[in-house]
Amino acid sequence: MSTLIPMRCLALNLLFVLLGAQEPSPVPTPPTLLERQGAAMRVLRDRRSELAEVEVAVEELLILSADSCVLLGRHLERVLKKERKRNARGQEELLQAFIRSANRLLAERLEGEGQERVDGARRAILQAARSKGLAKDTIKKVSQPALEFLQETLLLRPAQVWDSDEELFDQWVAHLDALDLEVLHFSWLVRARDELLRLDKKRAAETFKDQGDPGRFESELFRDLDWEATLTTPMTPKDREVLESNRRLAPPVDGVRVEETGEARGEPRPGSRPERSELPEPLPALNPEESRGIFALNRMRILLGLNALHADLALCAAARDHSEDMVKHGFFAHGSPVPGRETPWKRAAARGTSAGAENIAAGQRTGEGATRAWWFSPGHHKNMLGSATRCGLGNHRSHWTQLLGG
Image 1 (tube, one colour):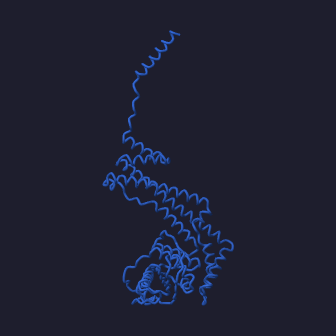
Image 2 (cartoon, helix red, strand yellow):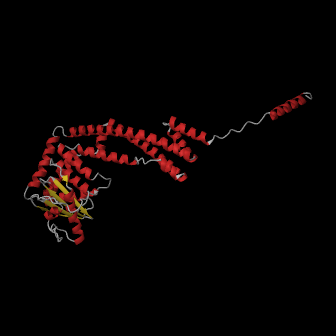
């Protein structure tokens, strides 16, 4: 035992000496800024499908330097350019598929006795409107139920079209995913621009060009789909042209549509079209609610098989003049105390046009609400379903004037 102990001690001492003689492991050199920048850019180029890794690389580039912000921004601009072309094609394909599915769904609704029931509802409304003794009670008990049937049968909502076509719904979801990715890339581009602005304003101005926020594309797509669903309603090619023309005067704007009630009066008058005079001032364009009100009337007329009405900016200006006068001078009537605007016909002539009937209303906040109020009033009801070809709607505060012309 006495000889083994020293040998063990000697072995341990030798091990300690050997370990102590080894050189320490070198400390890894931190990657340089350029190396970090290059690694992050490789992730953006080569790992595009790995979103979590890409997000880390983006954050790295945003904090490295002004140069890295420039590299990130230029990369994202190239990505967005490709995405926008691809998504534009995808949106057009989606719209065409949507139109096909909507037409197929409407055809299914009109099969069998569907078309006969539609024709019967139209006859009931128009016969009532053309009768001499039209009463509000008749509108409520006969015309309104028939109109509701026509709306349920002929008006399609995008959600109804999705539900009828599973393949279309999948295409819709895929397109929304693509738009969401484009929005994400745009948000990174904005962050790169903002960071470079903080570091070097002049360089930021030279580097980044206005790309336009893609966040609006999704809401525009919803409006386009809603519009295409509307155009599925049976109508003549001429009516489609009129609706498209009216839409260009005041593109649809997002907003809540509120059902309103309010006081309304109607005064029909057959009139001849006077000689067109010079307009005293440039005609203002439609405001969104005036546009919605005209569209609500045209949608109603098309459901009944009547022609759509052209939005006449001169009639709109004359109608708006009267609404403003009623508010300013505190009256509610077709006759006006304002010189040169005493009657609807003078007001139309002052704007270089003519009118055959006028409706007025007060208490509604929306154009659709005013149209609905007129629907339930026999005088207005007859005016709106008459033989006009042009329409003007003018709003001021909660006052509305509608002029109809041949």
